[in-house]
Image (cartoon, rainbow, N blue to C red; front, side, top):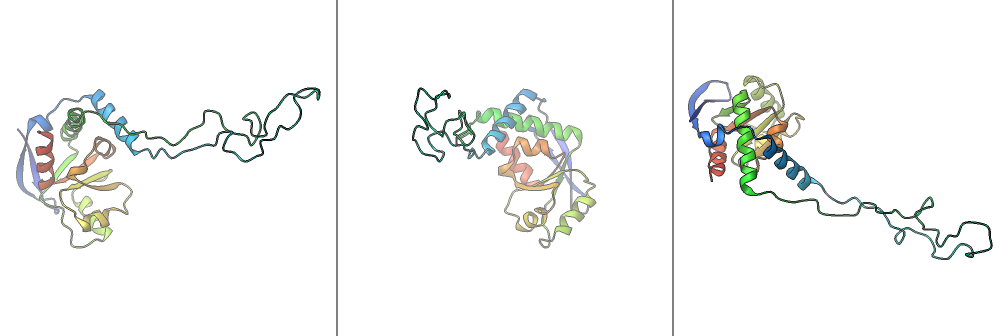
Length: 208
């Protein structure tokens, strides 16, 4: 069992927490992480891009000149893709890019990234993430006190309104719940700050 120190928001040690090796001592599996990130990014795509075909662009359907005898190339419609302002051939259309990977694979990727962050020293556990109000300076003060100066991911278990509002204006800080933890956010933030309750809940999920 891995043992991590639990701190308060004043960067004082207030206890220790045992973490299960099945979750926080997993080997680094780059192939699994790659598949999980690719799936996450695909699911974020809106898929709303669209171009018009020759049947959708404006323009009359009248044949511009007779087929033979003019000396010019034959043309059937002003909407032909060969002409400027004509329709698009094989252009993008709205589609659903989302897909899923097996639950075991997704959780395995999470365990792999969490273990690597712990080995790197980029995982911090605090007793709670309760703030007095929703001012941005509160999060800045907490991160400075904890010695965190890189992109930080704040993970709490409840709907912590003050934490959400105070962190949303900081470009290098993101707040999510323990139920929304994903591989992309764990990789995109070098420093992870978990409340004690959140990391226990996440561990229980990843042990299933």
